[in-house]
Length: 158
Image (cartoon, rainbow, N blue to C red; front, side, top):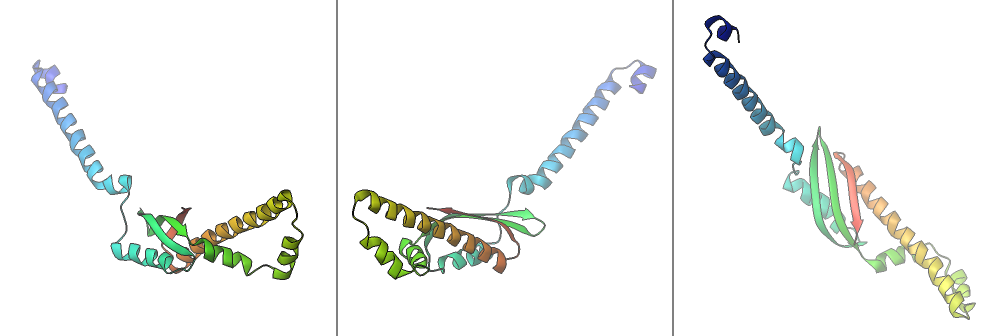
């Protein structure tokens, strides 16, 4: 603007504006390029993903895992997400191992009406669901314990 004032030629003002615009464009392109991974999230190494999925697949309560997603959050932190298909028999057996079978048998023998049967089934069904939730918590803690870089674990029940 100073040269345009002194010389009266508007070309200098136009060239200055183009220079500033070009500089801003170059800086923004550089920032986009350097921060793309941070903005989009990058996956962790395949070997690390394999190690995490094997830990889940080798657990007796897990029948299968699907839709595994990992994200490197930076600073050595990792987010792990997977959909888990649990083996219902193993989860139920885990619940039954903590039960008094004599008491349970007595409860069954006292069932005489559909309402009593429903109450019995609801009680134990709710407890089995609680056991499934405890299995999810156990697996999440195990993943974090064996892999300290894993800070966020999201296991979804199928």
